[in-house]
Length: 375
Image (cartoon, rainbow, N blue to C red; front, side, top):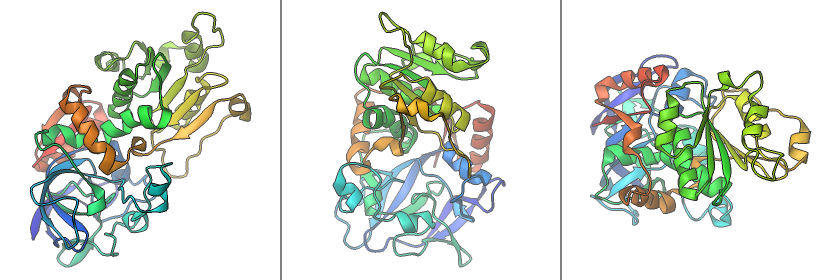
């Protein structure tokens, strides 16, 4: 079949909207009509050429929602007409990682997914007979896409596609980092570095978990109002904090008899390795946990003095917020439908596929929190 898609031909170049060929689903695969897809910083990271795993030509996009239109042999968990969210972190429930219950990082299709292929080592996309790579196992910048059955989550059919597509990455990553990875408890203090889409979702995750003091850190003063919408209690612009923001934040978090200071939990949502260090060192001596969510560029490394770790701080990482896709994503959709979390305010722009490059421009300028392409 033919489908319209935004094609990434090479790094650093705008996407090209065109028609491509899409082969139907094989055994264990699902054909989805994508109804809406978010434009995420990870897509931009790959398109920029900074992604060491980036492959071209490819159809990017991994934050989508749509409807199953066909299934291959052996598919049992979804059927035609089901509403689904594609999962760049699948959940096979059978591999050693899934069975361990210690991680959400399913390994069932990791090797082929990283090569831009379906599990059988081939691509379903092509142009004039030339292979086009899949992206993060999703490729939602195409009106139709094919995914493995284990990489789709069946969700509430009443949920709006143009909102729940954001649960395919940003919402789940931010909220999950709080609930699944850090396991924040009621009354905790927390600092969130970077108040873009991920950071705002970390904030609402902290509010959901019952955190008491939620400090947002961002270079853009306009983010203060945004953070407060989602539960932030204090805002800091690093430019106003003097030469070193760490002691400034540590002093802010001194409360009552505890005069050591430092947050119980800190979260880096910037991808900046200097900020990652600041986040760790702004966490509390003895028990502070610092969660790295932002993705740094190829070859970059993080560092700190060993003293920071020896004295009880923990450096943690998270992918997809520690969520098990087929199990947890439907629950988060239900949280949205029940009014427990907000998504609508963060969808600042709705675009047509032909305008997808404008979405990336607005991301770069800071004009948008999340742009969504509606097919």
